[in-house]
Structures are given as C-alpha cells and as structure tokens.
Amino acid sequence: MDRRPRRLDQLLASCGYCSRREARGWLRRGSVTVDGEVERSPDRRVIAGSVRVAGEPLDHPDGLVVVMNKLPGTVCTREEGEGETVFARLPERWLRRHPPLVTAGRLDRDATGLLVLTDDGDKVHAWTSPRRHVAKEYVVMLDREVRAEWAGKFAEGIPIGDDRPCLPARLEGEGGREARLEIHEGRHHQVKRMFAAVGARVLGLHRVRFGPFVVGELAPGAWRVEAGLEGRVAGG
Ligand code: URA
Image (cartoon, rainbow, N blue to C red; front, top):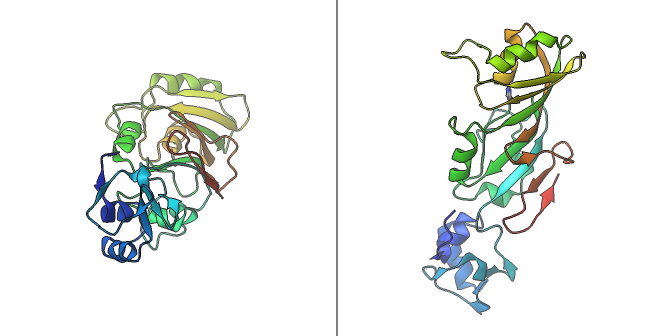
C-alpha cells in the first residue's frame, strides 16, 4: 500500500468518501482539515493521517484487511444478479474504495467460514499465488464415515482429474462423518473434488484457517478488521 503524500481529492475518493469532483465541493465547503487547518485545495499533497473529514480521521486510509465468517448461500463476487454477496455485509463506503476491496480467493456459495477481503493487490497475490502454498484448513461434513486409508491417499497427493495430482494434504478424522483437511493450494472446488476422488460427497464445508488468519469466535456473517493497520472494528 502506497503511503506517500497523495492529492487530497484523490485520497478522499480512494477511501470511498465521494468522487474526485464531489471532493472539490467538500473542500470548498470547508469540511476537510489538514493538520487542524481547513484545506480547500484539491491538489494539496497530504499524508492520510493528517486529514480529518467533518472532524473525523479518515476511514482506514492505508488499506483494509477484513476477516469474515461467510454465511451459507452468499457469493464471493461483486457482480449483480448472483444472489446475496459477502460484500453486502460491509460498510457502504468501503464498497466505493479504490483500489476496490476484493476477496483473497473464494469460497463456494454453499461453503461457510473464513474469508479474507482486502484492497491490497500485493497481499492478495502473496496469499493466493500457487507458488506460495499458503495453508488452508477446512472442517468437512461428509455423506459417509471417514476411512483410515484416505489420509494416506491425500498425503501422497490425490489425482482429481487435472493435469497433475494435488499437493500432499493432511486429513484428520475420527471414524465419524466429520473430517479436518489442510491443503496448500486453491484449485476450483478442490476440497469437494478431493473427497469425490475417494467416493465421498461433501455435505458441509467450513474454512477455519487461511494462512495466518483464523475464523475464531466470529459469529456467522460477522467480520472484523485485522489489527495491525489502524486498530480493530467489527460488524455483523
Ligand atoms: N474447496 C471447495 O470445494 N470449495 C470451496 O469453497 C473451497 C475449497
């Protein structure tokens, strides 16, 4: 994320407050201060931390990382007409940010659990690049009991119909229909296809971990901003 001084109108627009044209109106009306002084010039270059709008500090000017516990039936797209999107749960201003907030990887419509969203393209790349092998952990409900031999097949790298088998994955299950699976890549419908390859159908898929992030105590549908940026806020 670029933290160099930025044009004031561009900064307000990138944080989702208004368009650059509207920003000029806000500035004319004296709603914006820089270091405590009213600033009316849209091309003044400023450090985000020095700016207040209507007396309030800017909303996450140095980037956002949001962790959400995805609800079943919601989709990880911003396209209209695909049904309820995960983005609809977030503050409206964040949906006007630029660069836009995107999901780092996706979960299927019926899947639940940990979803990471950010406006930082470098982070998305670091977390989703096939070369990085970032760990993802799922709790999976199956249509049959977990069989002991599946762990060995998954550990060797199971073929799922692509040009190469999956990377080694760790499967834990205690004989019931629930299993925990850790994988290090993100192929399309990968978990469902891995279980299909051993003859099982996934009835429920819940992600509990993605790289350094855990879903923890987040209620279904709730989200939090990851600390380390400018503090922590949350919603549900
Ligand atoms: N694997 C799947 O099959 N679905 C997901 O949503 C995530 C991983």
